[in-house]
Amino acid sequence: MKKKALIAVIFIGIILFWAVEDMPAFGDPNAPATQYTGQLYVDAVLPDIGIDNIVTAILASYRGFDTLGEVVVIFTAGISVALLLRRGGRL
Amino acid sequence: MMENVVIRTVSRLAVPFIQIFALYVIVHGASGAGGGFQGGVVFATSFILMIIAFGMSNVRRRINNRGIMWLSVIGITIYAGIGFLALLMAGNFLEYAAIEAVLGIPHFHGILIDLVEAGIGIAVMAAMVSIIYDIAGKEEESS
Image (cartoon, rainbow over all chains, first blue to last red; front, side, top):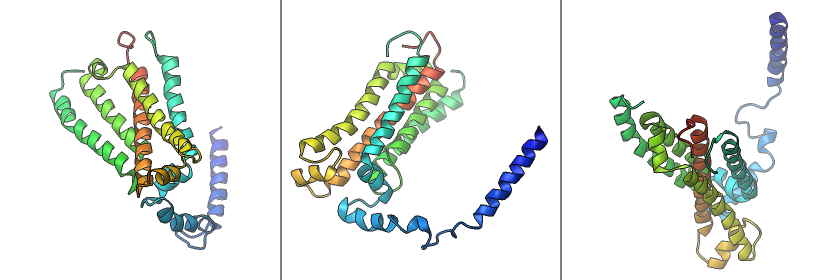
């Protein structure tokens, strides 16, 4: 069983190292990940919103509804732990 | 739990600095690295340190389960309330630009983002502390 696991790990590792060759270089401006909306946000954040932090602008303003969902998820986790583990007492 | 004077003294000194740093991370969210999620978790760590140093019952005496739950609800209400405020000002849900246009204050968009981040921070902090209370609390001291 251990040998099979080792063989599987080595096999997957070889595949991953093989795939690394095709990835763009670090910080490459022509990489596909930086081609589409990145420059758009960099140009639009300051006139649109007027704050310096692009990440926060996307998180709280452009994707505000998504972030509201994330907060509700964390709130739901707290409520669930309280419902499952709280002994005695009220919520 | 209560014997070690070194742990108690050091955490008594460290907790205010951790909380100030957490507030800095939350408030700094609009202009640099930071935000509500990170700041809320840092704030919750100060509660963990207090629980380790002073014991669960001491911390619960300062803020109990009901208070933590209320804080969690208040945080989400701040966020969603700003969203509905934008609806009242004839915008879409969470469209801060509508609020800024109606009130006519320049750079109000960033202030609203700061308020939203504060709401996120309160909600995350309260949820984390509530989970710690429920997992680490003993049976006789719950509620």
